[in-house]
Image 1 (cartoon, one colour):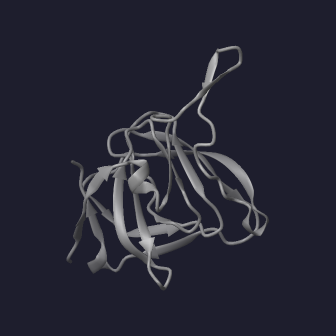
Image 2 (cartoon, one colour):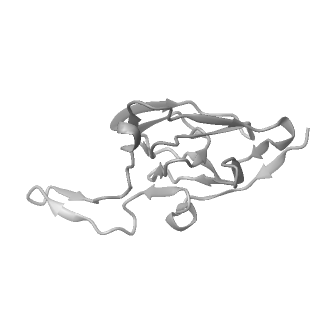
Length: 168
């Protein structure tokens, strides 16, 4: 079996932009509210769930740590909506994403590691792997779509095309 190595890079807004939003307050302008008791960082992600009469849903996701190096065998996507994953446990996590080729299949695959304070919001139709947590179990607040229509697709790599992801 031939397995290509997938390089892990820091999650930044500039590098992640083709796939969606990095949800973070760093470098953003907040504003004071509630008589100065809180600071709000407003409109950090574009939530897109209204195709085919969808509605926003909020869920919790518990992720177990994975063994590394990790073999990326599949990717998934939500063609009808964005999907936001906001960490509640402040542990770093990894997101694996891919561009889409002319046939609508995954193409160039990239891997990013969050600092544990950043969340992500995939645009509709972005190929991605389930969030991976390398060190500690993690909990995420998930904002995505409920409603009619098929909003889940998977792509499984041939054994020879799988990618190996290590930690730095």
